Length: 260
Image (tube, rainbow, N blue to C red; front, side, top):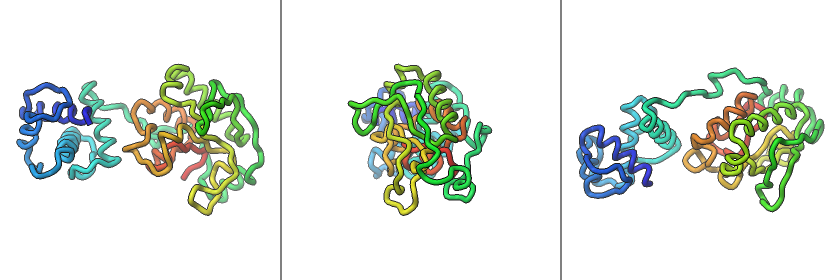
């Protein structure tokens, strides 16, 4: 919450409403400055007032924050991160969404005839690859792995991704950011809570850091939604892999070599 208050204080200072320190402390000066902003109901909870200041500030600077309602959701979280970057660096963050850049591979669409033709039967055409850095098994961190079992048609691409991750982040940041917390690849099972076969059944999907990127978590909670992981996603998307988190805003741990 402190970072949100600091950003709100910066925005209020820009308007000339706040002359105090940018300290992230919600005191009487910050509250008085907020009450000078037209359109913010003084009767709202203070947390919603702060959110509205951020939403308004983002909109004024050309960043889509969704409805200006004081409710913190995925779009407001996105706007907060973009606005914080803009205020710190004096420029907007470079945009490189997957639809703006050609991917190295055009994987087939999940559950399509082309998918079945390309990948074949579940549990077949599997190979093991040596990975460029040690993986920790996410479900029991006492165990380590240096190999991943995957579909042979994604093996080269998967290895390229992980080699690029090592080059971009290095061993220390890979550890610190938990990019080595491996949740699995090949697993012949149904989707969690579903009746269709998981893409893991073909060995062309991987999970990373499931503890901090849970199935139902959106951008507001998932670790992989934060800007520090932008280059992580670039490594995957350069090879055409698809993040359910970035496409559908759930299951941020899951990355697959198939369109959705």
